[in-house]
Image 1 (spheres, one colour):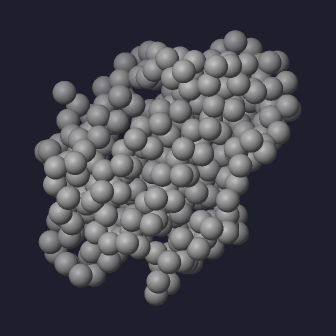
Image 2 (cartoon, one colour):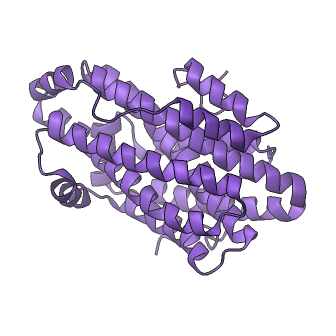
Length: 310
């Protein structure tokens, strides 16, 4: 059973190892040592087969795959920028050290995505060329989620207390990476299988997922520590963010326009409501991993904790 993923995920030994080290008596040190042992280069992956496969696809399938990587680019670019307030607000050295490794990881992931654009999609020019193209494909669902995430994490710029830090960790590590990111990765892997042979894309995703599962471990370890120390008070903060996110997500899924639905189906092989169900599944796994198993799905909850759609 994959405790940090779902039954859709192809479990590998490295992911299991990360889960185990995060449960140990010194999870922060163990996660850092795992990072040191598992460095990789975005320039080492061979995308030649992927480029040939992509060129042979029909135009609609190619557009769907490009949309997937526009979402991936935005995810990596936005989360990399959001990490700066975390570093300044980190409550101790161990947490700060892990966040510093995550900053390096996220920028490595950006470089990996840029290589996909150049070597598979044939779009040269680096980030200056890719960002405007990805920005033009930003849909209202993703834009609203990024705005909400930025609102919670951005609070750290003026409030560096531990409660604000916990809420930001829940929003970023448990929801952004731990729920939305994990759901996205599962559907993308299935889509690769459906449309053709993409060994380079699969390998690049495997390496990025290994990093991101470790990032989830950072959030899980910190949230566990706060719940152990502060009990009901910490739990109330976790519930505020998770319930606000669920309300926001329900609203976005239910009011997705036909154009957005069609684009999601072309990119991921599933409608937004199906993706949302997987996001909720991943969120409940993350909450159980920190010891919370009975957070309700309060669709009518106020959105103050995780931003608003308006």
